[in-house]
Amino acid sequence: MRNRGAANAREYRAPEDTLLYRVTPHLTKHPFFTFSSNEANLWSWLRAFKAQPSVDGFFLCLVLGLLAFGLVMMFSAGYVDAQTHEGNAYAYILPQAKNALLGLVVMFIISNINPKVFRDFAYIALAVSVVLLVVVLFYHTNLGENREQIARFIAIGGISFQPSEVAKLGLIMFCAADMAARRDIIMGRLTPPSPLPAYGMARLKTKAKNLARGAWESCSSVGVYAVVIGGVSGLVFLEKHLSGTILLLVIGLVMMWLGGVKWYWFLVPIGAIVLFAVAYWVGVGFVRKLFDDYMLERIVAWLDKDYDPLGKRWQVNQSLYAIGSGGLKGLGFGQSQQKHLYVSEPHNDFIFAIICEELGYLGAIAIMLLFVLLVRQGFVIAQRQRGEGKHFNSLLCMGICFQVGLQTALNIAVVTDTIPNTGIGLPFFSYGGTSLIILLAEMGIVLSCSRYMRKKR
Image (cartoon, rainbow, N blue to C red):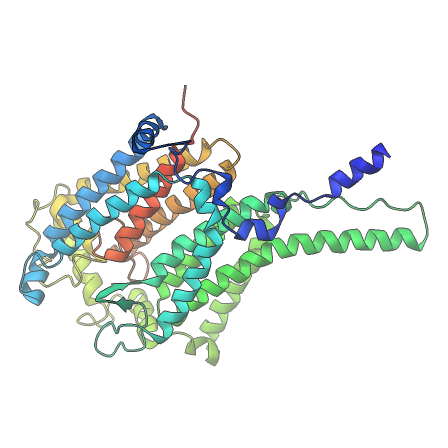
């Protein structure tokens, strides 16, 4: 009887192992804020707030430093363009400064929320992201003349935002929560096989069932992420947003790698990409129709440096002129010549070129070093997580910091003509309200997780 009871205990699945538990918020099991205890009044809350573990100071200083530096450089790079097109030199910096202040408030609030809350709402965040990506296909604001088919922004009450920015965070939260919950299956620790009979057909049937069950558990764990990542990326591709599609695909694949998915599963997407590239190169009709003309022209302009110098190559060529004229020490703050209507979007995607021109290679290297330190410190926070939620916290921090590092690397690669022009902004520096607020919200999530890190002795 004792052995039978032990076997039943092993077969019992705790509520924490069920899908319903993972997708349903259960805030009553833990405090909402990091400083919550049994507060009876406001003064108790303030005492608990003061007594809570502090955030990582080095990471916070890096975030504030990059934000301040980004606002200053955005004003320097964009005031000429703002004066010319908007009639006001402060037309770009004032909204960006307001968004930065709002983002700091959001970051402060989120940094005091228990990371378990992010796990509770991970599936809801993904669902909201998918809904917004579907809505923007039918209700969106146009980006300008001859670009009516590019659906990227939703305008509500005079405020526009980009759903793809929300989708990046939603995808990271979902992958972190689901991979932490499925950790044993992903790492190969599957359901124990049924005991094999000694001989006969029963042995063969049981062995076949064990193999089928193991294959199903392994394939289903990876198949969930393939469907989610592919679906979200596909919706962004329908927006005619190639750079956002690339970012989401890479973020999803890296999250799978960080989550412990076996290496051989990555041969499937790599093989699909190779087949897709070969089909495009050979000239398969339906593959070429997936890309708009402007996407193909950017690739041609990247491969052929003499292609359309007054058109598709103009922005990149002027960017290279700005980088080259900056030299080692730069022309000085505010002294850029290429921002005088030569480099288009100097306050946005190509702000790094103006930084190179004004601050030189030394200033550019200093900025890249700040980003490297930010990403590194984020991974340090992830590796030092402790407690029952350490796996989710680690994946969440690493995913967010990888996203920042990836966007930075791709932006610099575009500005230096290392890859085709994809329209990816530089975090903390490029103009954009949605991206800045969500970026600071992500930094707040990392700071919240840093309260639960193992302090270095």
